Image (cartoon, rainbow, N blue to C red; front, side, top):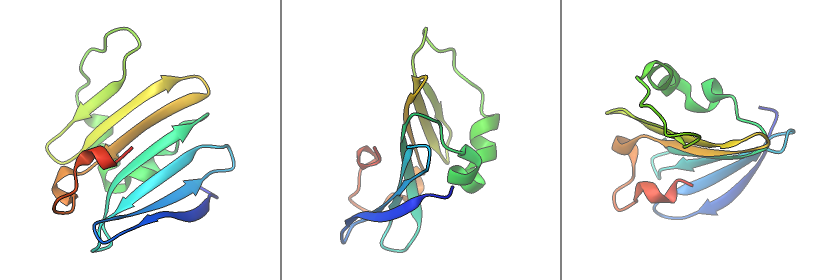
Amino acid sequence: MKAALRMARSGADYSVHELKTPTGTVVREYVSPAGKIFGVAWQGPWLPDFHQILGDYFDPVMQAPRDRRQGRGPLVIKQPGVVFESAGHMRSFFGRAYVPDLLPEGVSADVVQ
């Protein structure tokens, strides 16, 4: 990604690594105390490289059946092993993806934002 990395949050329950790409998109990685990334979120003028940030979850997300969206609503994909949400418009994109089974005990999926 050629991104600048900074530690945005470090706690007993999870940490957040923030990467800012040269194009201005910010990607946040949510990391459990065991060192497992349980979620990612993005915001910026360009969509991130989903293959890179989703890793092994890229194929299941991209091959998942799509629900019909209402107008220009967000894209939401809920699979048993991964949840993917993406929305926005030209030069203003945002979204998140997380693995429910990897959420640390006591941590809600709402922290991934």
